[in-house]
Image (cartoon, rainbow, N blue to C red; front, top):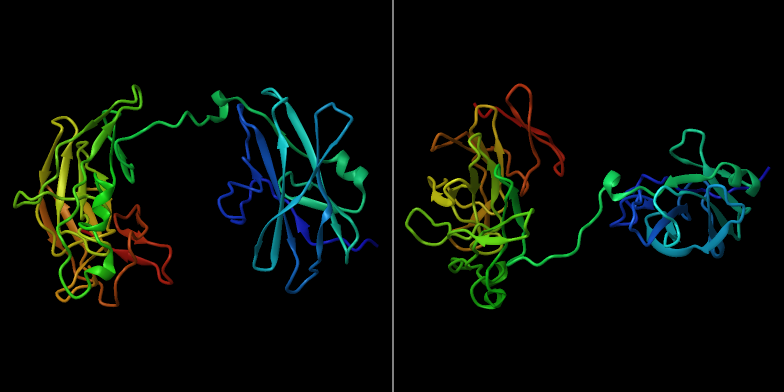
Length: 367
């Protein structure tokens, strides 16, 4: 009986390793124009079970168009080591394959402590199966079809924006409202210092950041007016949270004084009038809050941090709800703060559910 290695290839699974890969076939659904498709394999080299020492020399990817009889070999190269696994990769060039081409491929994995192992498509049509028989792998290979952009979509050309669109929201009129951290990058050294520079004292005034509108149809950008605090001072909405109201206006909570120090600002953008209107002040500042629209049309504001009296970041543990221009506080979290930008979901009951990143899952009645 063959001593096969513990190796796998699951095209649609990013595992999520290696990092920044959409799947172990990247892209999972290639569309023209595309220069290549990268194929990843995972191999267990440590830990329990049946680890094996894969060799780079002799490990290869083989591909051929449907109907072709000749297989083209591409060497697999080491890609990453994560935990007990090592990942190898090879690329299939698509330069001579038009849309509609069906491409077949299988893999050969060489070892110094296992028999050479071939990977083919499993009978489930999703995962891989290992075999010692290369002929079997050729008979049941992995398969993908090169699609057209009309079916799968395609990235367009890179285009310039007046600022980095860190925050973005699609408005009902089809325009995209965006803003970044600061209008002038040189401000980062003297106006907008990071947390260690303001511990022990209040943070400085925020850097100026002007939101802008981008028109996807024309590519044109237009700056909006400057959001302001209730006292008329400028507000930087970087690191805020935002959600659309039922009437199409955008509600924004929080903003940026310095890293970890948020403003107590709420403001609303009206896409019809093209104006920013300051709303009621929150109980304290919020940097990295989450804003969630509720079934009754109000919005829930959770989490964020603000500058403490002696400097440093303080978690804002008071949930607040905005309804028809009135901001109300709910009982705080007695067991500690939520994480920043908590993952909030509205349940069918109207309650909200906070799930993910924390060891505990939280629910809240925002009524």
